[in-house]
Length: 208
DNA sequence: AGGACGATTAACT
DNA sequence: GTTAATCGTCCTC
Image (cartoon, rainbow, N blue to C red; front, side, top):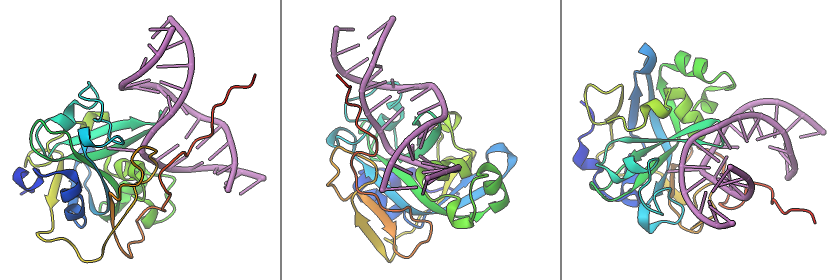
């Protein structure tokens, strides 16, 4: 039985630390991969300049404005997919980005989807790597994680906040970079390397 | 219609 | 530490 939807109907900043240790299971492509979440980030919709939903509902962000418990997948840098769990109540955009996890089942399948991974800890270390392991892409956008018939499910979630939860700035953003809305489990090898939010790209000053 | 930029990754030096 | 790859989305003419 997947996690019940009402447990996810709370703002991302509240839910994010509670998702550490939760288990996601994908049966996409007739293979099973299960993953235990070790690092997440909260994005609080209209209150959060770093959120895709900040400027309101668009075709891309529509899922975030819907009921909790669905997957929001987006395409990044022209080549990667990243995945979020939509949370908070229907109509309020809020989502938790899945940044890293430990593969606990289907390791062979995960490696086949991530040929560049050299070790188990690299399989789902980083949001696009995590999505890659599970086979998530645009087709999975909107998937209901709380439905027993769904190919992607949130199988379990700790009833209390896990021990060893750490908190700090989010990765790779420039807006609202000071908000400490990244959460991870201390001592987990799968947690991604810290980079303070800000410019990760060269300036594009034109020459005169 | 055009362009800047990104919730990134992998492969380099 | 640096940089190329690559394209959907959204904002500005």
